[in-house]
Image (spheres, rainbow, N blue to C red):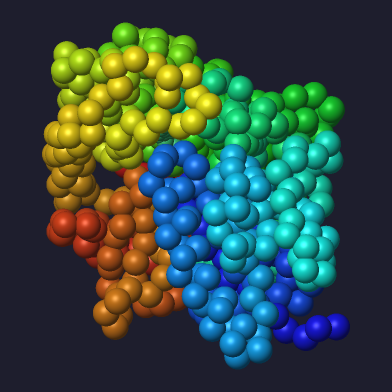
Length: 464
Ligand code: 5AD
Ligand code: SF4
């Protein structure tokens, strides 16, 4: 037994990487590793990278520059530090990373995390290791489940990966190449994981995947289950007060999912539905498989069923060939849907994707200008939505102590941060809060009642 060793894991990019990082930590725990937040005294540093846009890869190389210095300092003090690069940049660049940074000992792609212990055994023998295969075995079968202690440390809200990969091949996107084909986890595995999380105090579960509504995992009956059916099953897990799912493709909406929003009070009324552009010409060039009208119809269908439903989205500005008129169509869509939040990106050509080869690449200055215009349009709607919440009551899931004594912070059904003066005992429970004031980043409120409201149908909030 080599005694306690420390692992520092830094996640870039999406929530799936955050989830993967936790599972890597859980897998390394039986090997004697405990997590640390200080990279300089770690025995193992893992950078869990994102390849979706250029800047993320740049961040990796500048981070490696800093880590290289740390590794040298450790070596001077007689300590060995192992450096691993995981995630989608690892998958896409493979051995190139070893060539660009001599500090790196291990490059491991997202489908090989369950092999970390054996890969590390090889680096310990002085070998530089690259594993970017898509192995036939299911990594989720082998990856360690989160321990109770680890779960507790991670709070009241948790992510659970239900599907990974994507078969849609939008022309701008690397995901189908880095995460591979769409794979869904079986229902029983997911339910067991959610039960474990609930036992450790988790109250809110976000089901994540690159395209969660393509979910078709095997059910206990041996047949494929839809996401809607899975949500119904998870809502029955005692202790789970809130459910969310992300990210959806606007096209794959089957009836059971729409019904789940009607039938499950635990399913929060905020839907993340990436649209990317408001112009049909661009949507077609992106291979999004839907038009602006299809998207608006998907929104209307949800709103008809649940008036309180709010929407967030993703946009890309400056896709090759995007004209000013196309961009205006995007702005008009923002005004029409009134998204309450959005992630906005400048188009970034990804090597190996069709859009990177398209003519009429848009100059950086135009992209920047469009990004700012779009962001201020979205901010306007976000602010109006937040302001409209003042004076109303919502259910808030309390997450942690606030910055000031006596203050507790939580989230509304719409993920708005909420600050309330309340006893710490409310942490981990859902309480009714009346919103009294709006600051730049959060809402202030006061407790209407301290009674837990989680399991009753009224807890849907945002009523009317
Ligand atoms: N350039 C810019 N943004 C991108 N996204 C995906 N690929 C690219 C790219 N090449 C954005 C999309 C997607 C989100 C996860 O990242 O908006 O929905
Ligand atoms: Fe990428 Fe999403 Fe398109 Fe799949 S659906 S290719 S993950 S943008």
